[in-house]
Length: 348
Image 1: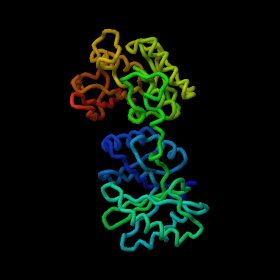
Image 2: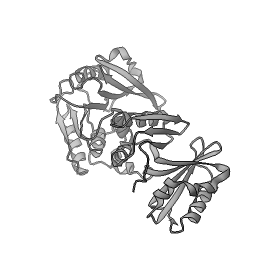
Image 3: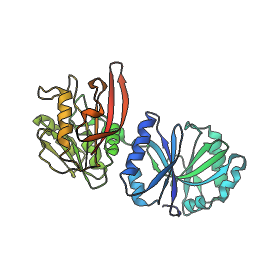
Image 4: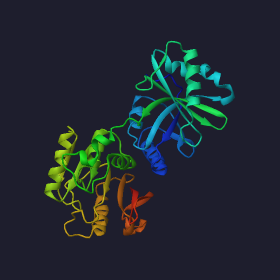
């Protein structure tokens, strides 16, 4: 059930702690790729508050794609901490709880770290006193109330997306029928797809499909996903992985990514091959990446994105990306001798 709301709504996004800058970029990218106008009202250490023109089932589904956002909630109201009892007077909270039987409360502090259980207990007690038909269910509640402490105020929200019970582990590389050491994890793969600003129903391309990490996530999110690899047995293995997950809106092509057998895609994202475990047909990986980026200009329309991840030691700069303008880049330390760069490039 979606609570009644005015034309505009404020969304509270609580980020996971792995990489907050990436989480912020992912949230912005998903909204920029949608048909919803928005404005970021506030950004703090682990959360953002965003005003959107409206909230509906389509936006709920779009926000459900987020990988690095722990909770997303609709802001229902603000109450002073010294007047917690006024929580019961928030009419939008009453609307959200109407007809429900169970609920839970999750409280966060100003910097995003969980507060003590006392605040959750106090908010829960006030709700129980006002809505006597409700019961607390910490396992599988129908309504999840979010309480965000900001200074002397408390923001109350209605949770619409909860990634704390996600199933990333079920799709991790070693769980797949076909495994290869260089495969990236599904959470990072989904982030990269989201950073490409692709929309549901569009065509997504990964020019180095590998075990199919990005192709899998794009397909699960409702895109038609295409993976390419020059090595036949890798293509065969990627197909096994897609079939094992019963994914149908996707395909894997055995071809050279510098001359792909596809002519029109909406967005591209890939983890460029590098290191000892990769197979690049005796081609220098850095030069291969640059050739693929250059050839991708013919596949993308102006304004559409190419997301690439590669080793920092390659030293790529904006001047290396022909026909593309770098929108943002993130450095991701892997271990002492390896830092990856995640670059988002826009076709010009």
